Length: 244
Ligand code: ARG
Image (tube, rainbow, N blue to C red; front, side, top):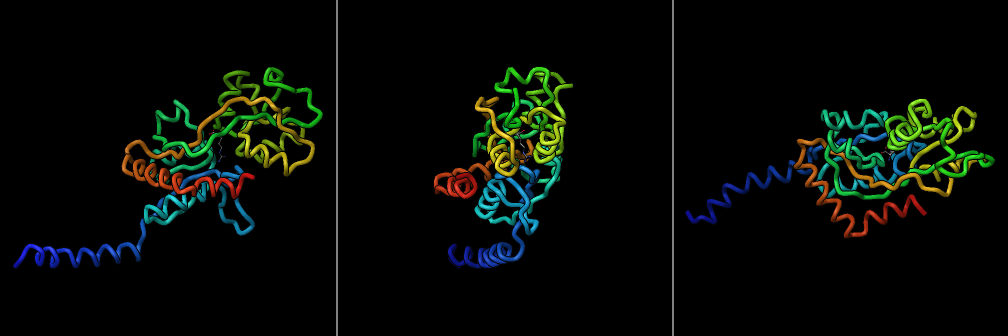
């Protein structure tokens, strides 16, 4: 028997196995997020999680031949969820920070975020310096929370489970301002009358996907898929759908 024939006999069942494997039971990529952060993640009228992160994750999953499943949870439980394997990856407009890098690995960055300040239109707050002595609404565990608590003290921040609740508190007068990422800020200001975003930027940051430290295989695959999607213009296309 020639080598070619032996190879054919050995390979044939493997090939069938591979094809069936692909069609029947695509592996699941489980993404954790906090879906109250438009336009990165939000829940639509059909109770589906949509947004830039959901679409980027779906495009990556497709490239990896995997099926995407999204789990919605509190923002401040996402790092634990991914490092304990409860989810495979976190896409949540999550900022790369040195502290988080101690617990997880981050993919290459796919977007920039800017911490901004939302105030009532008639507010006396005009710049970051004016935040001293004021009550600042934040989403618990976010970079806005961390920076404000560091700079203005623990007592200065009022923590909410998500941005929408922080905005509600601002409208009720329970806080004097809200510090949050710029794109969600634009969404919240557009959806709520009487609010504005200060022109001063508090911090500029990189968003990336978080993956468990030990899952270097997924990190590599994720980065390769992301690079391809960037080169194909797919990331710009997704972002352009949500940010005009
Ligand atoms: N970029 C900020 C951070 O990483 C806020 C992200 C909030 N994301 C969300 N899906 N709620 O801390």
